[in-house]
Amino acid sequence: MEFKNVLFEKKDDIVIITINLPKKLNALDIRTEEEIGRVMDEIDQDNKVKGAIITGAGEKAFSAGADIFPYLEMDIAKSIPYMRKLRDVLWKVEHLGKPVIAAVNGLCLGGGFELALACTLRIASENARFGLPEINLGVIPGNGGCQRLGRLIGKGRALWYILRAETIDAQEALRLGVVNKIVPQEKLMETCLDLLLNQILSKPSVAVWAALTSLTVGMETDLATACQMDIDLASLCMGTEDFKEGVRAFTEKRKPRFKGA
Image (cartoon, rainbow, N blue to C red; front, side):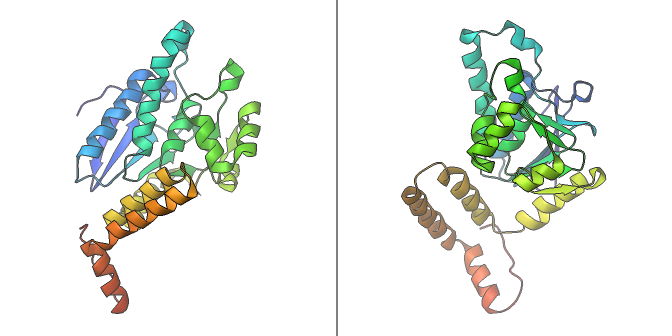
């Protein structure tokens, strides 16, 4: 698979996706977004791939946001199909059914922040900075930024940062729950690989998928529907060999040997 703006690397059971436009601070244009979407399609169809990491080339930026120049030609008629294409890419990231970790190095602004918010978890370098500055341009974060940030940190806090276009440093992002962990820049990828390979993908694959589905889908519906979905998902897990192995290992006081079935 060849791309112009994105690097695609398979490592063990995961894929590392790197936005490779460091001279533009990994700014996102429609081609780059669509390439990320194509990678998501490939991961979705490849049963050997269990998860992914998304990062930006260099140490200055995960992504400093959208490539702004195409917006000079934008109007209402053009914007709706354009924004729908962007929405569909992040929907693929969020609903992949496999864990996607954002390795946030440096600036993570605008569309870059929206991409990170669509990921399962976010690990940040100490120099990472987050923000949704779109209101300064007379628009709102239109690719799910308002909704995902609001759901993550609460309506009031999200409005505080969106209306004021305030940048959030790494420590504040950790306090708010925007990121899950902060590490030195030189340990960022190592930490993400360890998280994915040794802490998440070492768990039974069906249970990982069920947990992702429960939280991703269930948080968007009413409590009764979500609880019923959890019953269904847990029941599916209980039908797997890994569940039986997990129970046997627990009763025998040994480490389980999961096979992904």
